[in-house]
Image 1: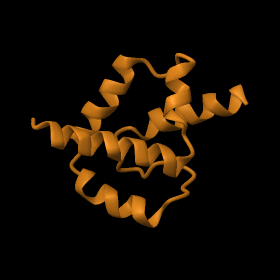
Image 2: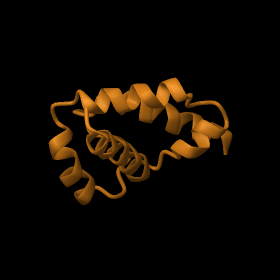
Image 3: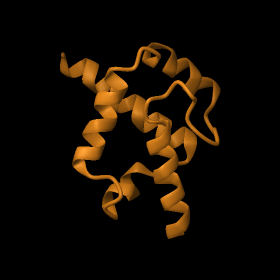
Image 4: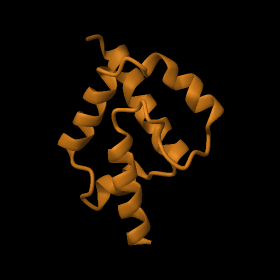
Length: 88
């Protein structure tokens, strides 16, 4: 896969984190999101058939309580966000 395509999915994950209020950087800093976990999220996003519709969803949902049901990383975003709340 071309680096540009990988970066597309990295950006989608970062945008989904912002939209859902999930601080991925903080999760990584405190050890809640490992390098392997980050790579798994990217890989899941890359395999998602819905990824082409994700940018439009993100444009329409800048502040969402959770990732859409179609998102293969939905549970991971929810878990990271729940841990984030407990830390605050």
